Image (cartoon, rainbow, N blue to C red; front, side, top):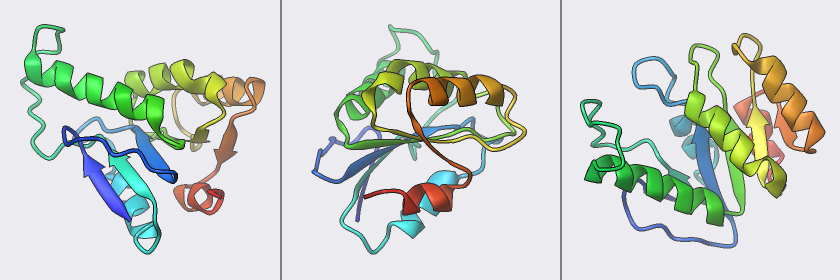
Length: 147
């Protein structure tokens, strides 16, 4: 397994996965670490957007160099990986994760985990069903569903 974190150069491999979903620093669990542990003894390349040097004071505008770099890194990764693991933490609102669901619903590369308690679970479940998106009840089950 190889983990590539933002903003490092993206490497696309035949078995690559993007860890999309809840981050909201201080609210969301660090579920990305769990995925990394579960895939530790595999040949997956993991793109993890949870940036080690993230600064929440960065202005979230197109003019902000660091913020723009982050968003563009995420879009490049999402567009090019084999699979997108999309986790909705019930303790968060995750508006960007909802955007990512909409952007990539048609790709057949999503695996969605949306536990009970997520404030828009109904929307996520309906979109997933309509577009034939693979879903899992837990992160562990999602990992087991990978080919």
